[in-house]
Structures are given as structure tokens and as C-alpha cells.
Amino acid sequence: MKSKIYAFVLLFFMSVILTAQDNAMQILNGPWKFTYDDKNEGFDKEYYNIDPDKSDWKTVVIPTFWGDAEYDGIGWYARTFTPDEKYKGNNVAVFFECVDDDADVYLNGEKIIEHKGYNVRFNKDITGKLKFGQKNTLVVKITDGGGAGGLCGEVYLQEFRDSQDLMKSKYFSRESTPLPGWTKNTLIYELYVRAHSKKGDFITVIDDLPRLKKLGVGCIWFMPVFPIGDVKRKGTMGSPYAIKDFMEVNPEYGTKADFQRLIDAAHDHGIRVIIDIACNHSAWDNWLLKEHPEYYTKNENGNIVHPAGTDWTDVADFNYDNADLREYMWKALEYWVRDLDIDGYRCDVAELVPDDFWAEAYKRLSAIKPDILMLAEGAHPRLHINGFNLTYAWNYRMTIAKILENKQKPEYLAEVMEKDHYRYPKNTKHMIFTENHDKKRTVEFFGDDKDLLAAVLNLSLPGIPMIYDGQEVGAEQTPSLFEKEPIEWDFDNHYYEFYNQYFQIRQNNHAFSKGKFQITNTNQPDKVLAYSRITDHNRVLIIGNITGEKVSVRIQSEIREFQHLMGEIPVFTNGSLRLELPANGFSVIKTQ
Image (cartoon, rainbow, N blue to C red; front, side, top):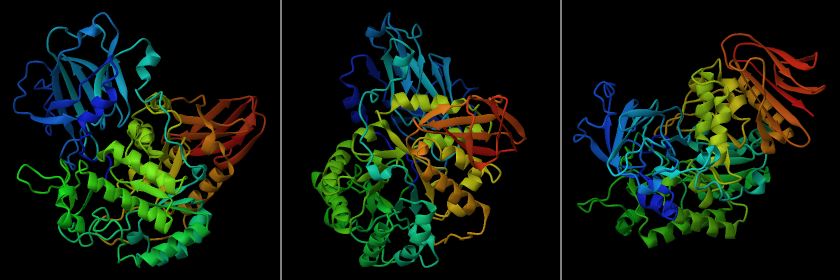
């Protein structure tokens, strides 16, 4: 399901628990006022100011996305608070863990921050700006460009000593859950059985395994393979995330024996298998709802409800305060690993399920299979210390998009990555991608003149690369979650040639999987994004022209020899690498 449009509320008590022991932090989560601004008149009406009446704004609990998942535009958040007296005479900053997408922040009517970028932690030194002994007003204007937007991360005040201290999150000193060794230099392939072939079954996927192995796929992530609910179903066929039974397979795909054959065949080809599961909710006709209604969230009238603040009317929300529900879901997770030998899970809306549930799940699953992979749909740092090896690199995709749209300069990438370094636990890894089942195809999102450049840049950043079913042939149609829309396979095109070549290069150059990231200076800093992945033995240099015009690039270097891997071919003259990059052109080079 759509991580970016999740109108989830990251439970306030979690934030308090995580930070209660930090005496230098004042939490500003909890109740805020909120209003939509579809006419973009909030600034003229001075929503940012202290005085305007906000009594008609609704109350929401931060962190959250706004409730209308289809609304793209502007929303305003506001709250008053009295700063702790301990900040008097000390350096203090206001921190935002995440906004979606961009934010203008006002303190007591004064604009203090203009931030660009989803899921990028940011802060502002407000020393001397707080009014002690009285109410202060914090207002945040969110501008969102796709899916539900919102103030989706924690907000707090914190003392600091220096600029580096400002960058460190409370997770920085922690250690991330380690990745299993088999993930090094692998490629994850998200596969939607319904759309993968006209038959849309397990057996047909078996026939495609040799091709996927040749492409470089080391792990297949199967979108949910469970039976789909009929009650309140969306569309003709329903969403695979409306799960009718957590221990059975969708009969439209085949039998459980067929799925076992598929898993075994994948393993025979050296391909690991993870399956997608939504532990946050179930279909309305899941047997649990009839036999264990106490497992579900109920409103004040005692009626079971769908997840709050969402349009997911085809699913019923689980209540994880119930210990028996937790035990059942742990058993379900254990079942597929122990009995069918899958290699892990991609966990839908992982941030909506309590952290301690995931921590215990990881403990139990690791006891069955020590090299289990747990991939969370989400990006919060706390996931990495609560049972997840891997999270989404949502901000990398958006960062590359902003650079290619010339909304940010190339140097912005290094800024984002530096912030991530201090935001996440040590040794954190993300899944990098340019598209998935919730997002537009690469060809559509970046444009067919920039799609290959976007793929080269994004999929060569630190992390585990993932491509979505059909991406390797330049598919333009994102298959519906609710209907049957088979992928149109055309292997005789430049996309298939490109992705085959690129992933072979990745497999043969370990700098991509374990090399240090470093920005490379060029003579065209505003027109060219260039960076290196460096190990002790070699270096891979990626150079991309982010403009729509031809650019002459020069890189000063002591390098005397290089190996051209793909893209435009450079020449070495007078102590520098030179190359002519066409509009949106790129070059990938290996050096010693």
C-alpha cells in the first residue's frame, strides 16, 4: 500500500517513551490544530501569525499525514507551547523528523525555516527567539505534491553544543539490525503475480526464473499471495493487501503446493524469496473478524473500523493491545518461514504496528532462519532498532527527482545523505528504487528523456537496489491493485538492454555494494551530478548531465587509466578526464 499517502498516527506514547529520559528535549508532538488550504489563501489570511482565530481548525495528533489521501496541495498546522525554563541562556533548536513534502515554519509570526524534501530531517537554531514564561506559537505550512501530505514526523526542542550536535538524532549512537550476508550485491525484484503474466499464476513465474536470474535478481519480493477478501472489495478483483487468511494462498494464483514449487525453484536458481504481508489490518471477511472480534479496533459505538484517517475501506483495523492477536500474527509469520522456507518479509505499513511486536517477531523468525530479511515499508530510524534490516529510501528517489527537475542543485544530494548519516543508527541500509507498485513508473515520473539517467543515478547510491515488475522493459502502465492488468512484455527494446547491462556491471563491481560514497568535483557543478563509490581497491565514477543541453565535462584527476563501463566514453588528456555528455546523458567509469 501507499507508504507516502498513509494517514497514520505514529503513536504519541512511543515518542514519549523514546525521549523521556533525555532531559535536554521538549516534545512538541500531540494535539495540533490543522486546516486545508485548497485555495492557497492562508498566507494572505495570516494563518502563520499569532492572532488569527484557529477555532474552526480541527484537532489532529502529530505525527500524522492529513486524512484526505487524494488531496495534493497546502495544509497548515499550528500549536502553542510554553518553552521549558531550562533553555534560558542555552543554545536551543527546533527539530522536524519528517514532513511531506515541503514546509515553511513560523515561530511567533516570524518565518524561521523554508524546507524542501520529503522524509528529510531538519532543524533551526532558535536561540534568542523563544518567549519564556508565556505561550509561543509554532505554525507549519505543508506543501504536498502527491498523495497525502502532512507533519509526519516528531517535532521537538533540543539543546545543542555545536553544528554537528544539531545533526545527530537520538538514534545516531544506536546500531542498526544487521543485514543478512546474502543481501550484499543483490538485486530485489518486486513481483506482482496477478500482473506478471496473462495467466497470473505461480507456475508461469517458475518459467521466468532463468530470465530473472540472468538479469541479476538475487531476491524476489512477492506482493501479497494470500486470499483476497470479498466483503467491501475495491474494484473487480480486490487489493492483495485485503488479506482473507494469513496462512493460505490466493486460489487465483494456484495452490499452496504450486507456491512451494515456486519457492523451491527460486532457491534452486540461487534466488531468495520474501513475501509481502499487511499485519496492520485484514479483509472484512477474514475468519478472525467473526471468531475474534476482540482483535479489532472499535469506535465509540462498539463497531469495528477501518484504519483511522485513511480511505482503506476494504480492510478492518487490528488492535495490537490484544495479546492473543499478537500471538496469532507471530505464528502466521513463523509459519511461512518454517513450513515453506521463505527468506523474509516485506512488511506493509510497518510503522502502524507497534515496535515491540516487530522486535519479538524478528527474534522468533531469526531463531528459525538466522539470515532472515525484514524489509519495512517506511523510513523511520526506529524501525532499524526494532527488527528491520532494511527500510525504503524514499528521500533518495525524491532528491534525484528534484535535481533532475532543476529544483535543487546537484550538491543537494550530498546534503541529504549527510543528514541521513546523522539521523539513522549506525550501519543502516536502505532499499533504493525509482518506482514501485505505489508510485508512477520511472518512464512516466522522470520522463522518457530522463528515465535512464534517473535509474543510473538512483540505483548506484548506497543501499540495496530494487526494480518493479516490468520496469526492465520500460513499462509505462502501473498495474492496478484492484483489477487484472497484465504487463506488456517487450524484450526487444533499449530498456531491457540497459537494465541487463547495468545490473551486470553492479554485480561485477563491489564498489556499488560496499563502496564509500563521495561527491566528485567537475567544471560544471550546476549542470552535472558526479560522485564516486570507492573501496580500497577500485573506484566507480558516475557522471550525469542533469540539463536538457549538451555539456562538456572536465574532471581533474591523478588517474591515468580507466575502464569505461557504460554511457558516454571519456578521454584522458592533460591530467583530466574529459567527455561530452548529451542532454540527460551519463557515463559510468571504473578506475583503480
